[in-house]
Length: 142
Image (cartoon, rainbow, N blue to C red; front, side, top):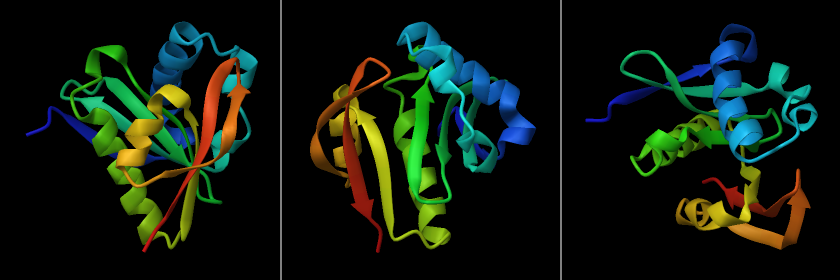
């Protein structure tokens, strides 16, 4: 049984906990400039927050209204424990329930195999985003 749970929420209610995870992973760990991390898409997106048994935020992702998945992150201490897989599954299930036909994301190239295992396929060539190599990926939903 997992020692974490996933909440579906919005930016207005969980900005503090979502921001802590994203700051730790993207800004502090990966060196993404702070002005690139925060954008207008947060307010209109559906957010997924992973919390541990003590209610501490350990992961997050967002689903934009147009079917883009973004800002998926898991704290280092929780990687390799199924958090990312469960988080992505929750996003996929929710997107399907909302009627999205195709999902798109911008994967860091080191994570492309993770998304490929979930049925995403690479589209186009590698590119740089926030100083990090990425590849566009998409998945068609049934």
